[in-house]
Amino acid sequence: MSIKDLLNWNLVKTFLGTFIVRILAVGATFASSVLLARSLGVEGFGTYSYVFALVSLLALPAQAGMPTLVLRETAKAKALSDWSKMKGIWLWSGSAVMMISLITYSVALLVQKLFFDEAIQQAGGTSIFALGLITALLIAMGNVRGAALRGLGFVVMGQLPEALIRPLLLVIFLLIAILVNVESNPNSAMKIHLFAAAVAFLIGAWLLIKVKPTELKEVKPDIHMKVWFFSIIPLAMMTGMQVVSGQIDIVMLGLLGTLHDVGVYKVVVSGAALTLFGLQVVTMIITPKLASAFAKKDSKRVQQIASVGSLISFSFTLPLVLVFFFFGAEILRFVFGDDFILGHRALYIIAIGQAINAFFGSSISILTMSNNERFVIKGMILSALSNAILNLCLIPRLGVDGAAISASMSIVVWNLYLWAAIKRQIGVDSTFFWIFMRK
Image: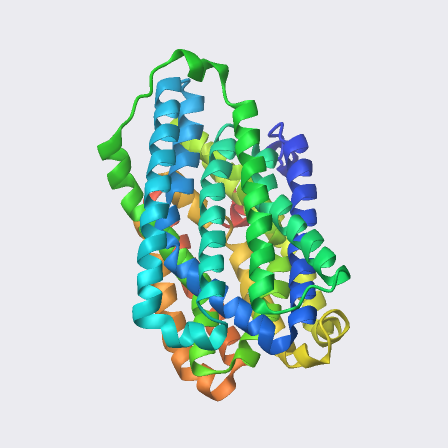
């Protein structure tokens, strides 16, 4: 079987659509970071980023792994034409997210008063914290709705609200604020982000209503509350560890370093995120396909999807890594200004880590779609612990560069563990080596 045959998934339209959406999404997200960094300054942008990192951690229960569960169960229900179960997971997940969101908001404000009050006051006060928390909760609920759309096979549409519309609206609203001379501070920036998130959420809800299967009107919901509750526990832990891993650098840099360091590092992370473009596009496309292949017990198809996904991801990532390696300093100076130039070493350190991430492919999707979430959790715990320990050792000595080294090393640890787990539990190689080594 040739590589051309492996790529013959009848997914060219979906791939091109996802490709375009992700390009625009990455551009909009990057543009919003540039506007925020330039309008708020290094310390102001650091304050904004620090608060948003905190509320993202505190808002974890609102999402609780629900998007992954909804995507998996929706894709499986569609593959088996089990419309009652699809209706059940939608009703149950919607009710659960709404209830958890209300509880989370109340608990998070209490946590802020008890444990983070001094830090929040230094970062801009309770107002920015509350605004950021509501924004994070809206994003969490939007992610659940997007998962339902992708599970139905609307991969491109499922990405639009949170991946493209929200950051694009944020850019537009920021530009309007600049043009009408709205005072530039972290509090006003968070208000603008909240408004963008609210509009994107409403658009996403409308899209799901428009495309939901007509069969759902004729069936009663089949709710497996006990099964889904116990299924979501490992998924919630996985999601929690994923968010912790993504925010721990910023939080620890804010605690062990300065808000200036946080601002620089946030810019570096935003720039390095461009290298994830290929992996994100591929993961969005193949995750529902993996769920369907596992539901049909088609292990050969799983291997094909995993390896081709790894090849495409790495092919997109490597050129960007080389650009950052050779021209990182010039890019930071031109786009963000001289104040951010000291982050150039951290930029290519993180970029190299993301290249390794792309090489190992969509490991998380392979494990979660096969009900092996426990290995993802173990890998994330191992990665987060190594990241935290390295941060404690390196940030006081190396600052931004120390945080970057810690992040990249934790990526390597995480991917090696997940790759070994996939080989052992499923018998699949998540990298593209299989394409060239198969007989």
